[in-house]
Image (cartoon, rainbow over all chains, first blue to last red; front, side):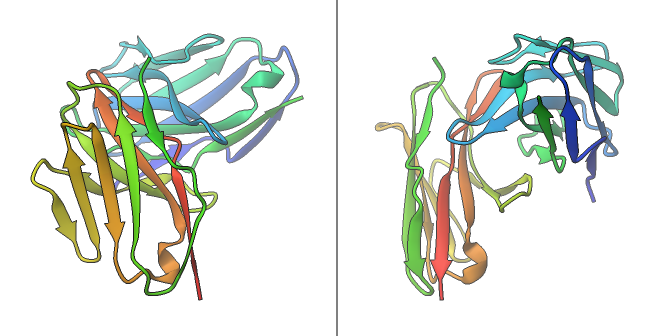
Length: 112
Length: 108
């Protein structure tokens, strides 16, 4: 059974703090993704990665960076958190060339 | 701009009803289409892929209309457990674009 885990379910940070969101998958998937989900806007892709040390910008990369040092782990970094980054963050993974994405449970981040 | 549009709903239907959702997309070159289901406060999960010829999985039927660039999901004999948000997903080359979702509430 595929499992995608995220480091925290709920997180509260202050404006200007550096924030790390961690995602780990246990199915040896090549592809990993970070989305944010906001009411009325759906899921929007922040960054994705098709291989270790590889990263590609999604639709809304501004204010975020990512790191993929190991195949199973994909980290999302908010260098200086702002209130407009308050959102639900979802990590997903999939096999290369496959289409089904498996999602983690999400991290609800609040920036005050 | 990548666009996948859905009627946000909510669709409130009685148990046993048939309900249909539509989703429109703007990329005529898209090749892959999916419906995901997301329960309240849960992560999205794949419900079914959408094939050119249309496909059925039990009470669920998905259809694709390439000429008009829309896909549909039909749910027959609705159950209380079908209450969820249904997300339309379309490939835009390197990655997938999710629609905002349509919320369904099946009422007893």
